[in-house]
Length: 113
Length: 119
Image 1 (cartoon, rainbow over the protein chains, first blue to last red):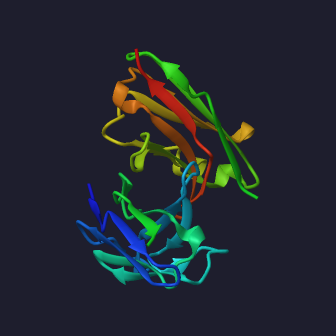
Image 2: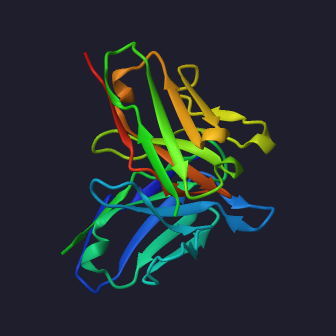
């Protein structure tokens, strides 16, 4: 199984400042047929299901604000919130869809400092 | 708009069975792989399993933790997804989400249904 490791576990950032979340996979999730990384990022607010933010490691889902961006390749990935807003308080998860079993990172809780 | 609604959750004793359902609307259900993902209270996300579409022979895949106990099925004529859970354990307690797979990414999630396994 591909193990997904997120860091940090939690993060407190001032409003308007940058938040950076890291995700590392135990093996490459680069899909050779299209040269894209099979990695997504979700946002989950309390009492709600996860919401897809980013897929193919760096493609923003429709309707997602452009302050959210994804980067990385192979085994190391980053989700960046360029200017944290109050509504961004949530838990963020990475997940690989390169192969089954689909596996998730442990989550990063983002709070306001 | 894609809409997924789970039902069938509740309290069940260890060793018991439960069948979850998921009704889908707003998209061509038969064109998509469908997934079940669960989340124990206060914890992270765990993939439960998948069912492919007809063109891929409705092949199912499961997490090791549920293989042999859980069965995923679908009824494309009724836009419905099912999760039959047998031999339930306390560690199966979780919110169970029905999720659409769109070319690999899990892009639409239901609100979830809570399954509690306890004596």
